[in-house]
Image (cartoon, rainbow, N blue to C red):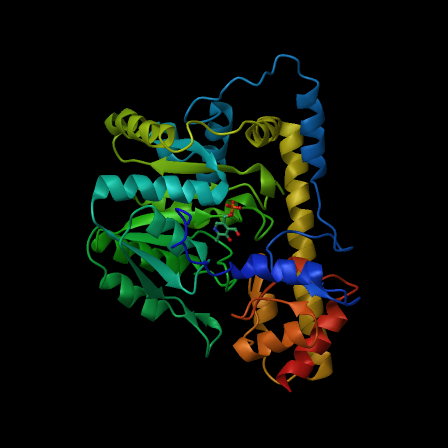
Length: 402
Ligand code: PLP
């Protein structure tokens, strides 16, 4: 007899299951397009050169020690990360109405923000796009939100954004609802609103008094340009919104396992800053007390050094250009094969993922018959596509849809 006899087996997390199946597979031409992590043209993980440089400098800096960080994290990191997101000339930054809290990567930033909103705003509803990154629902529910609702986002017919559906769903959202918005490189669809569409989304959210919670997991990684990828968040801040933004440094710094994130908070009243900070301090103190330092020191070192910052921007461009190149090669291959359907969306989508349009059965066929590991939603990580496997992947898609 165990205390835990009544515990039931939980369902597997699809993306990690795919990874395990891929690792266990002995097929020589197997391809991993599940997990969203950058790979080089040779299909290898990449530690950014600028990260290596920073790590060497930090290892030799004898003034650093292993004392606890403050509960809200390393200030030189949170200040630099907040400026990177909002831009140094943003009025919220200049007026000190914006600040950052170092959290455990993007997921931890979302969780801390959701915990805070749930406690402070009371029983509110959170809204997520249909489809969205699977974890949004789990994070918000575990943070205590009882009700989550979808807003329309992806239109399978046009393989683009259903802006009318989205706006209608936002118009019908109860006042005070928390709206999760992907700031760029929407996961899984790779399809973002245009600046004009963002303006409309902002108008409706203002009118309906909805709270924007941006998820910024791909700044710089998406277009290769840090400012462009932050434009939506900046425009909301410029319009006078109070907002949260969960910034991840997993992809743009390649620091997946260091778990460095920043919860950016923009308030409209300077007097509230200390109060909100004090409540976030109590919340974090009761969860994990304070964050780890290694990754935050690396990022702080790079963001606060002009030369290294420029090198980092080059590293980001290397990653985003390779992905764009692979999008082009995949589309070219499919078009050359005469694969039925329209494949323009492969190059129109942006960021790490492509929403191929393959249905569940077809995606399963890709895994079972061709050993191309992908999610059943039809999402593939473009990072797993390389010059050596792109032809194989295209042929597998061709065989699957014909
Ligand atoms: N949000 C989105 C949309 C993501 O795609 C991811 C990672 O895949 C994250 C947040 C969080 O990632 P992490 O917690 O590794 O920073």
